[in-house]
Amino acid sequence: MKPLEELTRKNIWNLAPYSSARNEYAGREARVFLDANENPYNAPYNRYPDPLQLELKDALSKVKGVPAENIFLGNGSDEPIDLVYRCFCNPKNDNVVAIEPTYGMYKVCADINDVEYRPVLLDDHFQMTAERLLAATDEKTKLIWICSPNNPTGNTIVREEIAKVITQFEGLVIVDEAYSDFSAQKPFRLDILKHPNLIVLNTMSKAWGCAAIRLGMAFASKEIIVLFNKVKYPYNVNLLTQQQALEALKDPFEVDKWVKILLEERSRMMLAFKDLPICEKVYPTEANFFLAQMTDAPKIYNYLVDKGIIVRNRHRVQLCLNCLRITIGTKTENGELIAALRQYA
Ligand SMILES: *Cc1c(COP(=O)(O)O)cnc(C)c1O
Image 1 (cartoon, rainbow, N blue to C red):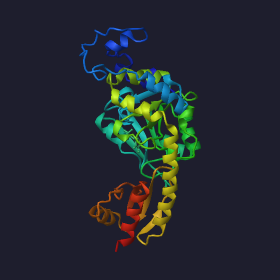
Image 2: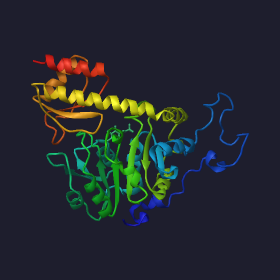
Image 3: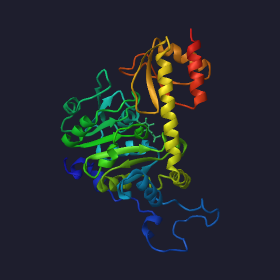
Image 4: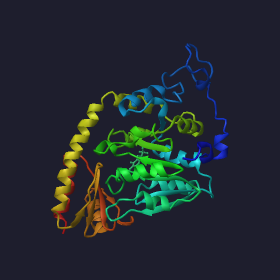
């Protein structure tokens, strides 16, 4: 890996961050807060929330097996996705490499930040090799994006190939593990201390059932977390989100139960799809969704919309011709989808 200073934008490396009232007193006992121009009434919503979310990070640390100082929390994973561009990529100059197809936000944030985005097409099994990914890099490549289990394909990327990219690439590698709770593979987040150039993304939006509260996280070296904290909005995770996340983390067994049911339902749904005359192929998955190749995805998609059932049409995505992406719902919802598709003529 190149030195972090060399990978970081000069203005960010030299940035003196905004220092909030709550940052400055942190750590000491205090009773009277007359420092932040808050209203003394309407507790607890009158006070600014903890800018570094320390209580929540302690709770997450136990569940995720990552030290609190190696955790960054943001407004969904969207925030750390945008932050890596803002911290490391010089607009109009640097570039990033990513597998294709994958999650759309990596490209959107590249475009917003005016950074060249270099997609590398996966093979017919939606797999990649480190060699092909590294071949797309040059001296101006700051980041490589890998999503595993991948969205919209559902499969995990071969672990050894990801590991090779991490050890051989001189820049930063981001592994998005939004769906790792649904997968049997060993998560890369447990390897961040071994690899200073690795950033792993997680979210409360999927297995944890908290998409509405917007809480995403990045796991990385202390030095990278410090950079993210310098650049983020001072109070980027609001009090309600912090409280609700702490509540959810009290009962990780509830999540295990949901995951178990969803995986059973996923098997049932995939078998049902394989039996449909309008389904040509069901792709292997380790996420809470699967990709199915249909006879005519756009037409079937519209047919389902007319019945009030919304799936994701991925027909226009590379390698996904005529594919629908099906999220696993409740037994009742899944049953409705299958019943509608059996009636399709
Ligand atoms: C759903 C998803 C996320 C979650 O994004 P949030 O902003 O945390 O809701 C992140 N990455 C991938 C690949 C996803 O599919």
